[in-house]
Image (cartoon, rainbow, N blue to C red; front, side, top):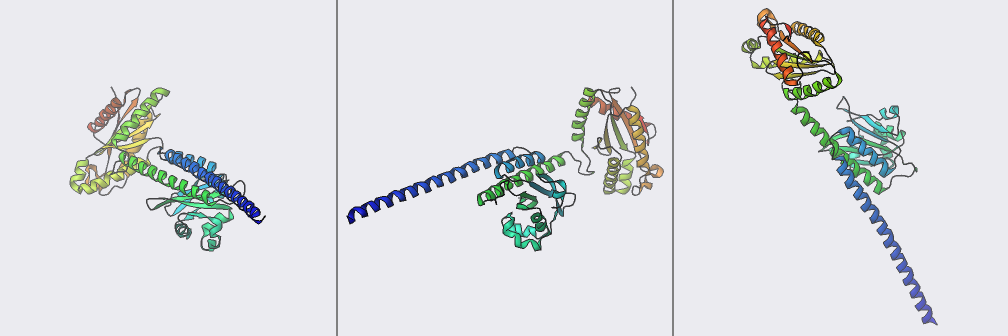
Length: 369
C-alpha cells in the first residue's frame, strides 16, 4: 500500500516537474523569440537611419520607429540652437509647441552628469529624488515625461530625446528601455555622420578666404538657375565684378591686408543681396552674383547700388588707392536676351565687366552685342 502511494506520488511529482520545465522552456522560447524579433527590427532600423544623410529624414525615420516599438505618447528631440550653450526642442510629436519649448536645457545643468552616471539613458522615476539639483529634471517631471536618452557621437553631446508615458499608462520595462537606448544610439551615429557630411560638403563649395561660395558651386548653381529660367520663361541676370587697382593695394599694403580687403568686400556683397541670390568668389579679386528673375534693367540698378555701397565702405587704408577709395568695376549679362547657356552668360558678363574697366573703372556696364 505504502509503496503504491509512494510510486504514485513520485509519478505525480515527475509529471508536474516536466510540466513546469516545459512551461519554463516555452516561456524562455517566447522571450528569446521576442528578443530576436526586436534585434532584427533594430538591425533594419540601423540600416534605415544610416542609409540617408539628410538630418530631417533621419529624425522622421527615428520617430516612426520609436512610436511603433515603444508605444509612447510623445517625443521631444532637443539639439543645439543658435547658442552652443543650450539645447532647444527642434522636433516634437504628441506635445504642443509651448510645452516643448519649456524643456530647453543649458549645458551647465547637472542633468548631464546624472545621465552620464546612468549610461546616457534615464528612466525618470528612478532619479526623481535628484530633481532638486536639476531645473531640467523638474521641468520634464512636471511634464509627465518618463525617460530621457542623450544623443552622443564621438564623445560630443548632440542633444537629448525625451519621451512621455505609454498609452496604456504602464511604466517602460527594462527591455523597452534597452530598445530606447539602442535606438537612440543609432540616431546619434546617423545624425553625427549627417552633420559631418554636411560640414565636408559645405567646405567643398566654400571659398576659404571669404566664406562665400566658390567657383565650383557658382557654376553648378548657375546651371540649375538657367534651366529653371528656361522652364518657367523667366529672366536671370549674372553680375561679375572686379576690385579696381587691387595689385596696387597688395603691393602697398601686403598680401595679408589684401586678403582682409577681400574678406570685408565679401561681407559687403553678402549683406547687399536677397536670400534667393547667390554670391561667390570667382577667382582672385573677381566675384559673381546670380540674380534669379531679374531683368537687365534690374541688374543694372542693383549693380549701381552695390558699386556705391563699396565706394562708401570704410575699408582699411583705402587712401593708398588711386582716387583715395576702394572701387569695383561691374558687368552684367541677362538670360535670355544676352545668352541662353551658362558658359555664354559667364562670358558675356566678363566682357561687360572689362568694358566697365576700359571706360575708366568704378563703373557699371551691361553687355551689348
